[in-house]
Length: 379
Image (cartoon, rainbow, N blue to C red):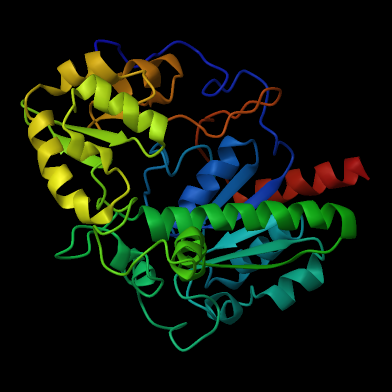
């Protein structure tokens, strides 16, 4: 745990090395919050030229993790002259990403019909919570609401009450990542057909998709309703989080018989009661026994015994501790930019590594001229 966050140049974080796999693609982002900016961060890290259109005086922190790597244009979309420049810019873009409520882009004169008529290859990425249609399409909401209607929130937490999994399941897992996948798939298809399309990425759809395995398990009788009652939700003694003597926590995931056997060996679980690994009725009492065992040593002591073995073990680290973990430090999973520790680009590419580029202010007229010139030259 003594390792420091590396600060030497690295292909993932140095703008001087090769551009990422999306180099040459142009994406226009209409500024928003949550999953849209996160998706654009990933696309920018992968080499796409992302232009963020934001309202005048917004003063967003483009040096933050979610805002990194973009050129920012402050523009009033209600101004007809500015709107004309936006239309000209989008005529030369590969993709657009917006996170407004359904109908807002249409009212601005920037709906799919208008833009695809001017640029047939454009991929129109739409990020919402409820989707572009349906009874709740115009209702406000947040991550907690979108995952509530999918079954995800009801399945997470102790028996007494659901627990919020931060906003990872709706905003980022079911939202941003599905938007990125959809936009990339549409760009790939457009390269063959020459035709763009609308990508309707809804957080409720994505969160539901993330629950696919649990719907399968339920259908086959291997998952039951109710929290802390199954082998992946904290019900099983061999898959969960335990507090140590120091007050810190560790996690174990000894699902397979061979991993469970090693857990028993290294934790000294000689009690024959632990033979009943897969008997649900025994889980509560075995969990109590294991709770007492893990309380006999500190987190660091358990790390010395189990970390790096096939027990499937890891210390539960805080945001401050995570970048200092030897494995995270060795892989340069976290980097420091502008005095802020943040995750490095992911995933990793062997030939065209992603990079974190410097944000910059830009003028839309200059960008339009630049893109027009590039397109004229390429033709």
